[in-house]
Length: 257
Length: 315
Image (tube, rainbow over all chains, first blue to last red):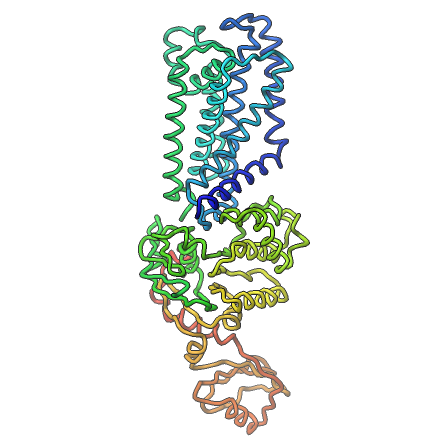
């Protein structure tokens, strides 16, 4: 395939993915808006007013970046894991496998599709948050970079999960039992300074801590961890996940007889 | 240059089932080729490997001069596949499914839409273009898969049981459509369980059984191998016994129907003369089974002693 043909094929997958999640918007775009509104009302307004300041900001302002990041992570992951597993389940993956598209193009198309949903939901949550608090973004480029890399990383995670999944239970185990706990324990709702030395050290093993804090640094200008080390770690994980997913796709793991 | 060449193609599945045991096959350009075999013989595995849906264990696949190992993209550009099972997203619209498939081949959207319209019209699906695929009937879904396989205008079209579950009228119209495609110069390979379909459409035929090609010849030569043909004769008057006809094997099916096995060495004239001499008046006659079917059953029966209990798992 020429470069132009590969570009057309890539855009075809991205368009298909975006069309899919827009078609089912009550399942994909509406729930995060409602859930996050509840978070803002309950944790931000009702509970937050009693907590007072955290990290030099009022509690509502402090949790907004974490909640935006949580939406991006969950939706990037969720989009790719459900979409790619559905193509396996319905055998429509065969449409791609018989075509001359390279595994690189297929993977990139799905990942960008997941990123679009993650970033779109992130945008919706940000808009909702503006009804509750003011946001004055401190480092716009870092903010955008962290969102782009994190959504890519979790879209890749969703892809790898879908490759190994054999049934619908397999695509809910990781989001429910690994991703959600790691996100909640990743400093979305609290500063790591509140933890004892032991639990702070344990928490630093959680990769989501770095994403939430790097994003919080971009928006508020404060972070519990070194931002540049966070960016490097997210980038390294993204590259490793991409290469792993590409290798699995080339081998045909879970999709070819 | 041949349309498809398979050299010593082998496939052993992870569970140890040896689905293909060294297939050698050549399909010439412009041919209309039938690949037949009982369930589990290795047809779908062969098609799966050629269409890149199944990883081969060994051997070589060449599509219109391009090796599937060395020139994968070029080889894949040349081939269109209509699988046995419906394999499109049931929630997508008919038009979108075809246009998207064109996109996977790098065809820009304006041309993709033009081609989608062309093939959906040809296959009688244009009125359904805005419907979700799940709302189509079984026959329409099969035609949708044909339109989708043609949208990048492949030179080689492979159809795995294209008329399964399709009513007679529609089957005939699909035959006409496929004959038209073949007349335009496309090579067509099909698998089918309707042997009448293979006999009517295909010029060459290969029979695969237990992962091996047991016959590969042109249709005429194959049918000439049929040593005995069985006919059903409807009699004018009921009888209580089958006549004794030297050289023919005759059975009474019911009071008004005879079943006669006619060896290739005997003519039908001899049969009718012998019947007339014994006052048997024949009102009509028909083949007991399609000729190809009769031959197919015999060829497959010859292989029965080797039968593998895991056969059903092999496809």
